[in-house]
Length: 169
Image (cartoon, rainbow, N blue to C red; front, top):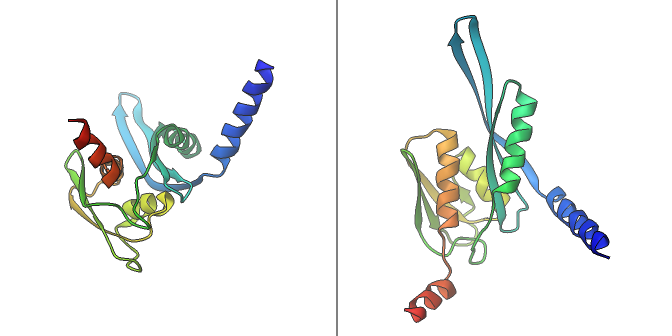
């Protein structure tokens, strides 16, 4: 009986992972000069999401693009966060930070759409957000913008969560 439960649970998890959409948002080629010549490495940034409040960002490095992309995809699937939304937008204004990159996320009225640059837009679309205003401040490195966006989205709180925190004090 236990083995059947484990198999069923594994099948459900793999089915849930298959419904995630995947998007490659950044590829960077790095050349390291060593005694024998140049060593090339590829780093990738991948976003996965189900367009229904779940999104993750992952990074992978390898000597070849397909291997780096696969590693980034696996990393993104391990780092999925659950978004707190109010309708089609976020509940409040927030600033996400990573390194020198800062991303300002502001709620927008219905019908506004996603006003954002490409890496931020990919994360928001795959997360299921339809109306939002963003502004990238500071560095415009793709990886740092992605990390700053995820940082901001993971720090969002709903009215109910804030009320519960205030009542407990």
